[in-house]
Amino acid sequence: MRLRGFTFSFALMFAFFNSLPALSADVPNIAAASDLQFALQEVAAEFTKQSGKTVKLSFGSSGNYRRQIAEGAPFELFLSADEAYVSALAKEGKTVDDGVLYALGRIVLFVPKSSPVKADVDLKDLAAALQDGRLKKFAIANPEHAPYGRAAREAMMHAGLWKAIEPKLVLGENVSQAAQFATSGATQGGIFAYAQAISPTIAAQGEFVLIPAEWHTPLRQRVVLMRNAGDTANVFYRYLQSPPAREIFKRYGFRLPDGQ
Image 1 (spheres, rainbow, N blue to C red):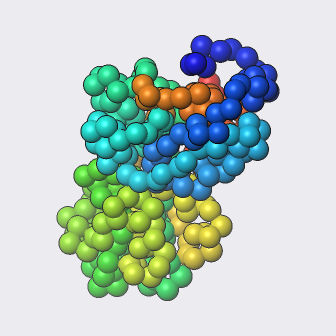
Image 2: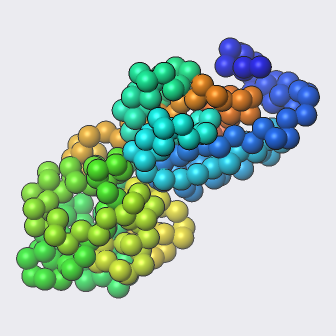
């Protein structure tokens, strides 16, 4: 049974869903962009609390998930950090529709406590550190398949730093790994997702500044159901668009699409 056409309130939808025959095996695999690591875990926990149903979350780079889904990976829902990957899968007939825009992301410059580099919004000290030798290594996600890595590259190109910093880059497989490199002291800084930087565990390890949104292409994040999506995936998809879920995304620094 598909639930996409229902217009019930969320309370009625969950009551209806819990009255269905036993679906204990219906635990959908969810592919999610790494920037959602903290926010989506909280959303999923609230979903389970309200519905009694669970989902299995996997976090990684959006580009890699786009490829895996195209090759038949059994994900039922895909939350991408770049809506272009969702559009590509929709054109290939892998999804039920074009999905919905659920958030817009931001990037930050982060420096760990041990770093000789200062975090400033214009990246002026980063530029100076490149010249005077204070900056040895710098972390970003791999721009070849990670949207936040592409945004980081665009921001540094805007600031005129890309050619100078490129030889010093330590590339994370995804934005979470880039954050690990930057916070561990393995690098003197990095650029990664605002939603990660404001989490207590990461914020306590250094300082950060938001990079101006106009310095990079907007990080328009879209979620979509796969054609194999079951009932739990359908209800979770609806829950992601509910006020409680949107409030959690807002709290983690995501900007909501216009009208939400």
